[in-house]
Length: 208
Length: 302
Image (cartoon, rainbow over all chains, first blue to last red; front, side, top):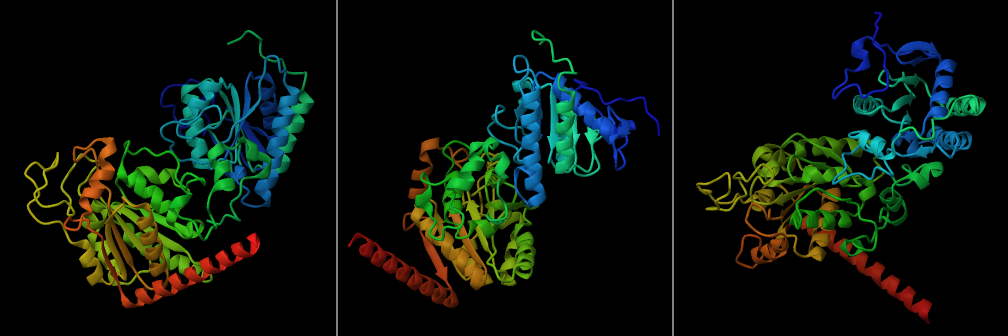
């Protein structure tokens, strides 16, 4: 099935369609997708790095699968995520860019409210994105169902660029997605950020 | 859950919200002596909840969670009602059942846990309102007791369907007029504690939650008896202050008034013979432990 639909930053509208329903398909092993077009994994990683470097507030949202040390693999991924965050921080222009690492510790609805400065909740992710003016974010270690839910809400109500580093088959609802994520792949993304440092224009200092 | 198995990843510990860090650093998992006195000193296993201000159910929740003898190896089963608004904020594994289905879920769960973990105590505790326990779920409640399923059933008895606006429940007192029951209840409050005793429960208590030390004692007794002998049942009065026309500060007094000797929540306890033996054994062990601790303390200060 071919489709003209492209998964682009929103705000699309209140209830955006799921990208799958619009004909976007998931990448096969070794592939990724950019805006719904299948590309090689390297291309997807490069695009993700570009987005981080050009964003005002590039942010990583680690989920419960990596925040909690369920096993050695999860602990390694947590280490790789910290490395990626430190790399982004190093590579962006601190005068106009502010890298963030904000956890999604679990999926429970939180009452009376969440603190958007310190966490993100999949049931209302836009609160964190709006509050911190996040314009590019990456989901990693979030269970697929919750990631899909959040990615769709974000596309519906914000102009944030979304990247999904998925340990399973990837996410159609993100603008860039890589599948079968491992600690090595996260480190590879950090390497791309390093490699592209200086070659990507940072956001204009006075842009909103 | 095991506190050894589920740890925050070291590399990301610092970014976790403080309530999660506190659960690792200051919660009472694994502490055999945990109890209601930990409230205020240690990290509670209940986070902010969405119950009404002054709701006695929130007090009951705190006392129960502080008193569970083995929270890291306990699964709570809840049902529809005000309690289901609290479970998302509880740091003990929990399952939300279909309305009234809680004792059936708990039966299967307890059996599965016994097969899967033959060498460990895995406690199952049902916590549901009076509608789920006595009206909609009465079949499942009784059948679990008939089958001698080894778990504790706690009923938060507020004597009506509170969060749907005040409909009549089986545990409502005779003659009571509620917002959605304008004619008034025409028959007596169902005597579930007596039914529990006749249905095979080995430890049954009917009381209010006005005294935290009492709640600690009955929770620990109920869980230990359920673990070793058979089903146990606690009926705790947690009045809905909104539905009975009280203010936030009046919940405690309402419970005190209702536990007077002639009132419907006067302390009632039934303990079967095997349960009596078990509790006596546990009390003797506890006494021994305290004497030993006292001796050690005296040795240290000498």
